[in-house]
Picture (cartoon, rainbow, N blue to C red):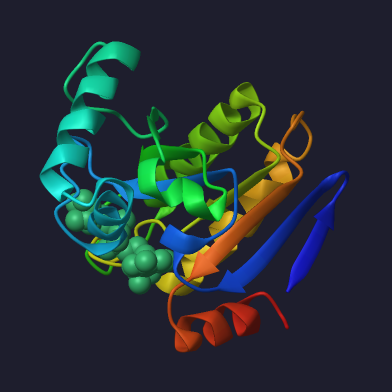
Length: 188
Ligand code: AR6
C-alpha cells in the first residue's frame, strides 16, 4: 500500500526491519537505550552480533549527541548499522514512543507524533532518501495498533511539507496479520 504526499511517498510493507533495504531504520527504543526486547533487541543483535556491545555503543552515542543518559520523546540518537550494512542500511535512528498499557489519548498520540517526527527530521539532516520504521509503541509498550498506524500516516503527511532529502517512508510490519490489519485501517 502506498500514499503520495507531495514529493514524499508513504508505504506499508511486511518484513523484518533488520534486513530492510533502507538507508536508515528506526529503533523503537526505551529512553535509556537498553534494547532489552522486541525490535530493539533484534536490531542490536543484527547490528553488532552482541546485544550488550550495541547497548554500550548506543549509550556512548547518546552521551555525545544529547549530553545525557536518557532521551525524551522527540529526541533521537544515531548509531552505525554495522553488520546490517550488507542490506544497504547505514544508520539506526533510536527514538522513544509512549507507553500505553492498552490506553490511548491525545497525550499519547502527541508523544508518538514527536517520536516519529524526530526520526524523520534527523533522517533529513543526514541526507537520507529512504527510511523504515517499525510500529513504534505497538508491542511491549501496548499502544493500540490501529491508532499507531493512523498516527504514522498523519505524521508522515505533516512532515511532507518540510521534507528535503527524504523521499520514501516505510512502515515495516513484522507479521502477515499486522500487515493485513494495517491495510484495513488505512482503507486498502
Ligand atoms: N522487524 C519489524 N518489526 C518488528 C520486529 C522486526 N524484526 N520485531 C518486532 N517488531 P516493540 P515498543 C514489531 O515491543 O512497543 C523494547 O524492550 C513488533 O511486532 O519492539 O515501542 C525497548 O527496549 C511491534 O509491532 O516496541 C523498549 O523498552 C513493534 O515492532 C520497549 O521494548 C514494536 O514493538 C519498546 O516497546
